[in-house]
Length: 181
Image (cartoon, rainbow, N blue to C red):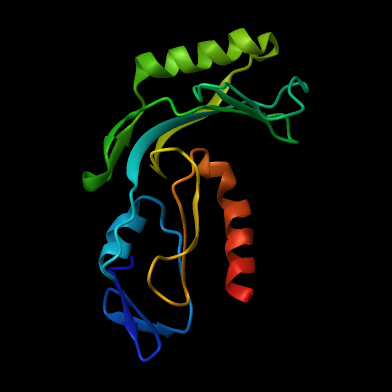
């Protein structure tokens, strides 16, 4: 686990336990830990952490060929190539990021899965493979914080986009392009 970040000799020092790593460029993409780590370099990132729930169904016939979302952001449905369906949309589980506790909220979970089945009736009858609660760092406007870290040369940040579980790879690609410019 990374404990701290610092500028040093025109580059950066990354502290992780008893180890210190040196680098010329820094990419901060640590989800809910991004705020704490940026603060070790004197940068305030306006993020908060949600405890979102996600559900994966058993494989089923193709019923969704696009990512479906609700304009209010309370539903997200994606069907993978293996037929499983990911049901999410920012429904909150129970947990405290500071204590690293997280669990499903059974009432909200039933509502979330029920809403998904009402939008796509083809989901009815599919069994649930697994469900979990996980953390997602979010900005006030739910748009990604993606680019140069304010006031620090060669430091970059990717954090805070609603839907980050699936947006992470795209953010990583954009971040790598920015670093290589």
